[in-house]
Each structure stands twice: as structure tokens, then as C-alpha cells.
Image 1: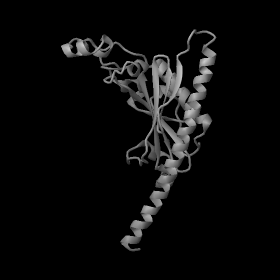
Image 2: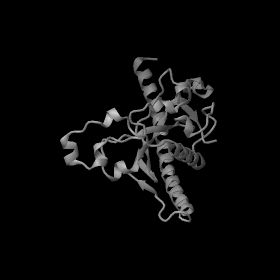
Image 3: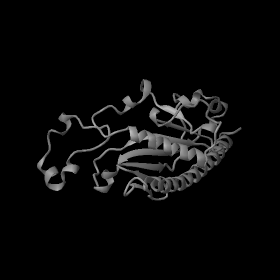
Length: 234
């Protein structure tokens, strides 16, 4: 095979795979938006019996982003428009499914971030959010989730489950369970002991202090053995 033929063959093969990956990920993301809207309504209806004003709200933030406000927390789901391959040291290569064909591992990504809802309400642009999970979806709609261990439970076989509405609901509810245990901690004193005049003149007190749930603390200490987990919703 000539260089030209080899280049065209590889280009065609990868282009077709990546188009399928993007289409599957985008379809899953739109289904995720429906799941978020349904969960917001369902949870609000259940809480309205015990709370005067449930603070649960879904928001479509554009073609590739959506959010779920859950009390003082905000989960932001963001789909990346590119398709990725894993580096050779990634633990996905330990699975039989990944080793069977490199094409199986080309994946789209949906990132799940946790912010404080007040950070957006009061435009506190310096506040921090945390990536608590990311969903990988391939060309055959198989998926796995990489995230903080408290979000869910482990699985070992990438390639056994396909993404669907039930799986997406499990992922969202696992994220909600995690953020309920992931509390806002008081920042270390030395990090907030000095402010300048501009900060106090242009901002209210809430905006002076950069805020995040683990600001000044090691976020990765939430992981067991310092590692991230892979799980599915089943």
C-alpha cells in the first residue's frame, strides 16, 4: 500500500469512528438534559410537602451545557465537542474491551462540575468549581464513568453496558449523593488574612474571599488510596 493510500485509509476510518462517537455523545447529552429536567421536577414535588420553597432547578445553558441547582450546590454538565483517545497509562487499557480494538476507546466526554450556586448568583468569578466526574461514550454507545469514589461504585468491564436514560439517571443521582457529602470547608486562616482596598471597595464581603468547597485543602484526599474510580450506574 502506498503512503497516500495508507493516509487516506486511516483518515477515513478515524473520521467515521469520530463522527459516530460525537453523534452518540451528543444524543446522550440531549437525553441527559431530559433526565435533569425530570429529576428537578420530581425532587421538587417530593420536597414541596416538607419545604416551603424547594430550591431545585434545571437550566438549559446552551447546546453543550446544562445545570442542576440543588440547594446551595450547582452541578454543571458540559459536553466537549472533540473526540479523545486515552494515553497509554490510563487504566481503561486494562479492560478486555479496550485491548480488543483501539477503535473502541475513542470517546466523547461529558464533564460534571460542582460549584456553589451563590458563585453564579452573585457573579463571583474567582470562585472555584471541581470536576467530580466525567462520562466517556464511544462509537457503539458503550460508556464508563471516571470520578470521585464517593460518587458511585466500581465496575471492571468497559463494553458491557450502553448509555441510556436509566444509566444517565444513576449517574446524576450518584453525583447528587456525592455533593451532599462534599461540604464547604472554612478556608485556612493564612489564605484570607490579607485583602486589598480595591477588593473591599468593588465587592461585597462574599466576593472578597475566593470560595470553593475545598479551597486550601487537598481535593484528592476524598479518594480512597489517592486514586479515582471508574463506575457504571449498574
